[in-house]
Length: 359
Ligand SMILES: Nc1ncnc2c1ncn2[C@@H]1O[C@H](COP(=O)(O)OP(=O)(O)OP(=O)(O)O)[C@@H](O)[C@H]1O
Ligand SMILES: [Mg+2]
Image (cartoon, rainbow, N blue to C red; front, side, top):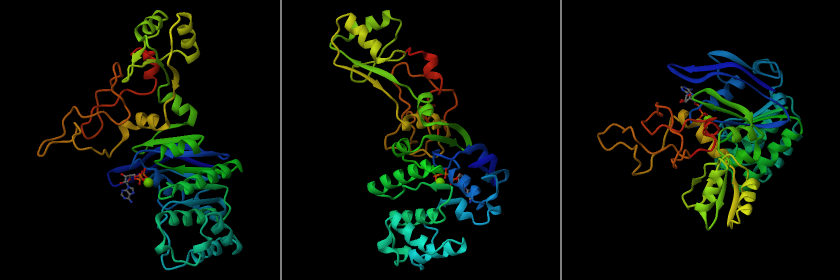
């Protein structure tokens, strides 16, 4: 278990981590999400005692990291895969770690095999690819067979087989009752790996919830209906108190009713359906909506509305934040926009519910 209490880190005027309090529990993979610069790596560094909190604290199984006698048995971490002595072989790098933590040498061979690096054990990491470096870092994290594992963007640089391998590994470690805390920007990957999520933005806690609840609360599920008689279908739905919207391709989109009910209504009115499908939002969509106002670093495509013309300040009416949508009846956001002058994102959370499907 990792427990954070009011954890705060300031670098000069910059508050990188701002009063974070949450607990990472054993037996499950907890995803740690946040836009670039949100404070994930800083938080993880403080867990390991590599950075001192300005305020608050963080404990590992009730102790500060510096109080752990053989830390690799309690917590194994991959933070910065490049933090390896480049001139020492992969085997010797791990052997040094093992010896300093009272771990027998045979464990070095075991972890090298687990991560698939046994063939390059005697090679120096400075010649390793990004993915090989990640694997070596993961081997180091596993060395002490720790009860807690913490990975900062572990799939960075891994090939598809490697991504699949680490997902399976993390889930297995969690099933064994360990605490697994992992950050990633790969939402589709995270959606398949984590059961619990902690989301931060600009150092502050935005969500600490199960994956299912996070997606349900921060996104919209609707039913898509395609029929050769959309106007008649619309009348039927409207008579039932529903307010269908029309999607970009002419399909009707219905909030506030499940697909079976809509199918039954169509059958009762002898309406032919070409499609009746429940559209569930992705983790990516939910994440982008929740964090839209916390994104500090925005990319711009050439021709974006909010890209300032040479010599001009950014205009107030830029393009929407990615994934926020601007379809008819989309909720309009609060008056305050994100830094950089983009169009404010839609108000979030209960907003879909408040609208009760009215679009
Ligand atoms: N040593 C440091 N000195 C000054 N500022 C720092 C330092 N480390 C981090 N920061 C700042 O703290 C903020 C949080 O950075 P951090 O690396 O923790 O974010 P992150 O969530 O890991 O981002 P990313 O997704 O890009 O890895 C950033 O604004 C960063 O510039
Ligand atoms: Mg980081």
